[in-house]
Image 1 (cartoon, protein in one colour):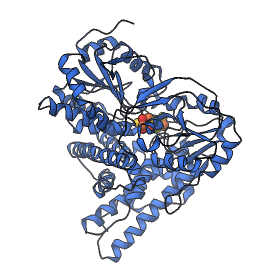
Image 2 (cartoon, protein in one colour):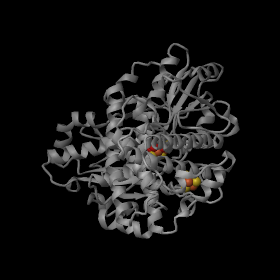
Image 3 (cartoon, helix red, strand yellow):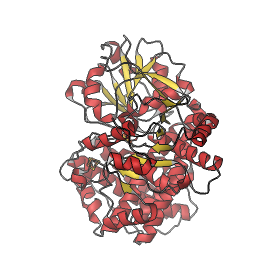
Image 4 (cartoon, protein in one colour):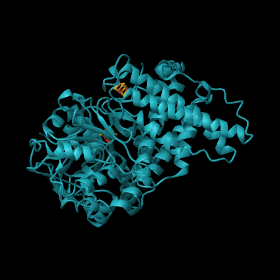
Length: 548
Ligand code: FSO
Ligand code: SF4
């Protein structure tokens, strides 16, 4: 195996025998085979579209891409089933094209033609993995493109769960996959990567509309961190539709529901505040889950990433749904109408002890674009008076490496006249620190999940308009982003598309960026690696770091 798609790639080079994430060699090779199969399907889908024929493979391509995002699915037999589905769809589409008299004889790439027994899928995937492309810059750009569209696929999947789709987003995913089999030049591939950035903005806007039209605009909300004295179900990941169904089915059952990780921002949506058994948020970021899930005592539902391989102590109460999967965990599938039966979790919960309390108190969030723009006068006054000197966007992901303490230390040491804008699980590095407020505006404004980075971009664009600036980079906003998996790559490409320059990224630059591609990003976008806390704060704020 060779995988370097996430920030935890071994030695910041690539995982070779087993993933740091826990993914084994077979699963990694099957994921490579699934991507390979998707390229073949996409070649025919591209041909179908250019011939004016419907391809119908949007949902399948989207969901199969999402399966391969870091920490989503560890279930080798399950991934083999996805490969079979994609190969069947590919061959069905090829047959339909032939039946319609559309010539496909020039589509000769292996991804479009291979067939194998499922027992050989992993071998085939390994042969067509990342390293099968020898040129370092072409490999780097193809993988950057693929990782960017994996995140787009994730956001598009969530929007589709709420009945929002965009054929242009679906087509781009397929065009990008097909493009990785074309002999494109470095410049052509850079063009595709930039298109991924603009499609990422479209996909995040679509998901934002799906969430806010279904559940209302996030509002300033106080979330409980302690526990109640009833059994509970813990829901993690990003899928709000799953949460809605779980809340409906648990209502009146005597079982409480707690959010975990990226599900925390669900509390900010008005539609969920009516559920009195939505008890609070339990625990911190994804990488703490072994300790926290053991202490939770009740069933856990993983709707997406980030799964940490569960210990035997709680595997029997660990459930997956949607594109997530783990061997030995019960998977809850949707019926044809999208309904999921969470009865097995509820029955199990009733016999479990209430969660063990990990902490108490509250946190405040809900600062997505509508809420911040409702406070716009206050925010603008604070900027004009100098009460707020800078906004520091510190969104993205959390992770287990010690180097990520950088982000906690930056939050702690930023001057008192700065405000942190955040989204994604990166917030758990500092959202429980007593950082206070500026004239009633909290110093950490949490917009929501990683996809709600879209909100942060909208806020920046609105401020640009209010201050009459031509360039987003003239705003008193600096970007200090933590990344982990491919959705963060997507968010990064979206920010580049919006013209943001000078983004600091850490704790490392992606292993999949070749020196040549890194140079392009540095030269064109002034991307830089995080550095020393005190120096970075001085550079970003023009003021000395606070003493602690
Ligand atoms: Fe985090 Fe995981 Fe949301 Fe990611 S829980 S790391 S970027 O899945 O998607 O922020
Ligand atoms: Fe390694 Fe990350 Fe790939 Fe897992 S997803 S195998 S940790 S690079």
